[in-house]
Length: 94
Image (tube, rainbow, N blue to C red; front, side, top):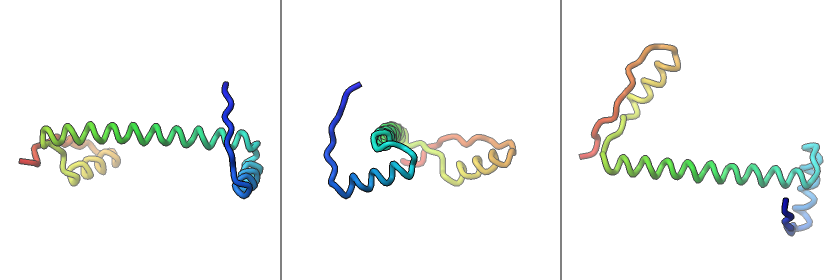
């Protein structure tokens, strides 16, 4: 395990101490958890961006998609426990 030093302004350090105390954690644990959450969110965002770019590239290439009203109807029926025909992509760009 490595050590990292951070410099905090006095008011932020006081706020950190108070927040950590309210959470029942040490300032160290509070900072570590905050960093872990931030890293996890950044990784999630990067993966979401990757998936979106991949899907946009597929759409740009094929011009195929499923209209939102068909997706919504399928999802509502499925959520209600009804049997629904799964919509299929079709060319929507010429």
